Length: 138
Picture 1: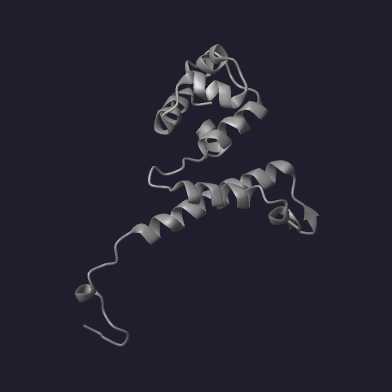
Picture 2: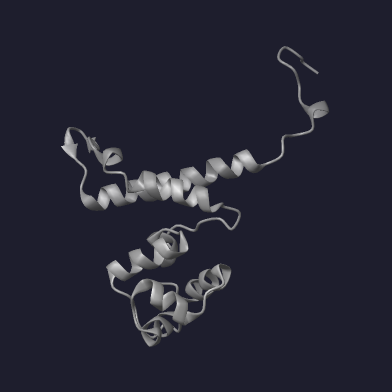
């Protein structure tokens, strides 16, 4: 886990280490050791930390980087879709159900596509005077 992210996320929320620990149901010293990189949280705690800060576990692990411009709603929408059991129904290749690892890879790919698409939507449109109209050869 990228422990430096924990402090950044906590600071953005205006929480102390004790506040974060209390909300996670762990000892403040345990939480402090996560931020210092001295201890690695178990998977359940990673999920709780991600939920507390409104990010994905992948973001905490540094696998998929959530853009700084992402809104909390966008992060939540993506997370809900990725964790929706109905979204994973029928995922197969050649008639064989995808393995857990393959589904995780697919989720990572979908996440990247999600952020790339939103990034395109944020880009300003080109100046219209430089765009050609259909059928204009000039």
